[in-house]
Image 1 (tube, rainbow, N blue to C red):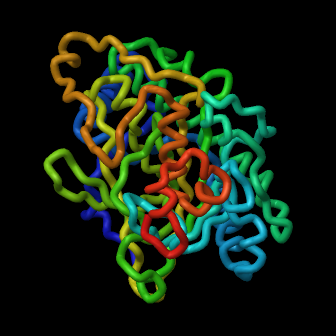
Image 2 (cartoon, rainbow, N blue to C red; image 1 turned 180 degrees about the vertical axis):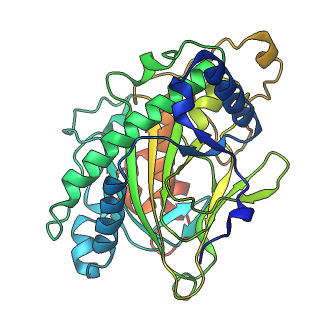
Length: 351
């Protein structure tokens, strides 16, 4: 099931306008600036990612999810302390409630490092897990990750200029390599899911998210006024949304807006590929000096006792991973959990 065009509610931006003549560039930045303050979600055209690569990623992802469960569990996330690999349906949590989706998490390929006691977020650094049954998945997803990293940085540079900054204002906190997290995701229909929660209402933690949707709707965005907007797939586009790093850096001029995914109807599957571009784990997010006309529109940071925001990037990322994957936290990072957290993340609980 797909939406008809008249239900589209998010704006569409063509990133190629960012590289055109000065007049068109100014109009593009004005459009982008308005979106950043309104809700930070938009469809992106003109991104330059080859459709053949997109098609291969979706097709190969579907092949992985069609594997027998025992094959998928060979790369289950709980095998490793680095939060990489396969998560079966119902084992990821948002705000304590089960998300009804299965996924594979792929981050930056790296060797594990020695972790000082005062930098526990470095435990996230390490190698990915790859399925022996589909060896082509590794080069394919790494090639796609490189392409959407390029797109994400291009969007981030445009955002910087829309905020009256030099295009490279954030470069010091994401070079030589940003935090990269890619997820291939399958949502089963509500005949399998025990609730309509494909993934619960949440904010993304990075700079920007680059989301590829296949053919089935489900993504929703909540505006500042509490209105839910549907964001169905539009062929040839990504959905871009801003994350908590930009909310921190702009003291709330840009908001990391709440969004969720509703599980598909019975008998229907939904597939997507989400990429999250963030700063280095050792970075501290600065608060940038906005032009006076933008500074007066700052709204301050979102206050949420269940999701405090930290300017320390590694602390933010580790907080999110420990909460979302309690099985991995319990198995590999129990020393970072309080006694209450250990009890609430026991098997069978809704942590």
